[in-house]
Length: 460
Image (cartoon, rainbow, N blue to C red; front, top):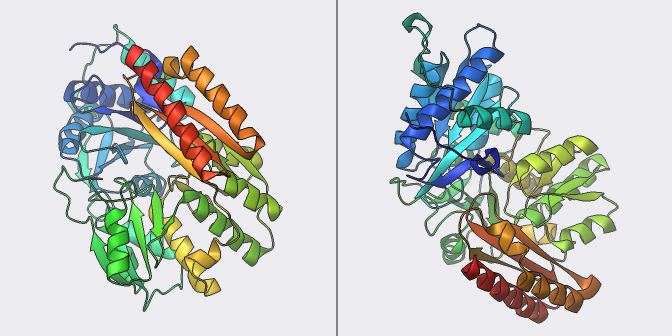
């Protein structure tokens, strides 16, 4: 088998391994080797005892191919495999702990289009793999001398279906808000034709909600297409046309959530964090602190400061948010995209659990979404994505013409705003973020910096 060469950092982005199907890291050949290398590492970790890996996926058509290949590699290394079928990423993290697995792997590219796919990894504690474990995995993948060889027949792993995985997760989600009922609440629910398409409707309907469903007919190609948290226009239309109480949108693998209020106004991850922090203050008299990211709106930071709630920014990516939460001993953190971590309940971002916690706040306070976020003034913010060649983002951000544009825009904003350039860890784009108090100035400066980035991208 051909060994695929790459530097370790070329395999992992901010959230596992991801790329276009058929490229170097997202094909059957690589998947088999990945499963075998991971299996060998895990077999060593359990020291001869039989261990099992939870293997799940979202609804992409390529998931069947990659799941089968990865499963073969794991089994050939001596690891048992529990197959769940389509299941949200956070459900896999929960099942790893519940079923005593040594690891979990999700075949998913999250919010990306169907032509992308990849792998997310969880350790036995339900947390994303450590950097050290990722590095060990990458080193083994790159090692030419590590040729694949299956263990003897008596030591081969065994696959089996975990048929009740979805039902188990639904019951867990309901237990997070034990006693809560949603009777009489009319909700539009957009599952992005993704991994939540069964479990999210089951959870909310069993709690009594009256649901209008969007994005629950996956065909392998339509995941995240004109639906879900990345494209909520249809959700807004349905909420307004049917005069519903609110709308909820997940992304393709269910670790993100956004809301739409009864007037069709978006409520993003920063605003959801604010709602949950204020609910902690209301119920417990304190909120120790909140972790956001470099992309978090300045309005969230200011609103929390006015309530004397500490706020810190981490790098984008739930691993970094989680590390900052651990460092400070806080239980609430997340991203503007709707990746919310409520660590009183979960070990990773969980769209369904976060949605239930927000719904519980609505019921407990008797307030509307707009009333709950009224204490947060979201500053005008523009985020533009510039398509670049894979791996070229860092060079583009450091280009002289780009730095000049950024410095000029920073000076124009002064202390009333921020500019951030960031190569995405999940897509081949550079994100240009500009925010400030003057919306017209923000739009103008965002265009200037974006134009500079586009020019540099054409030169790379």
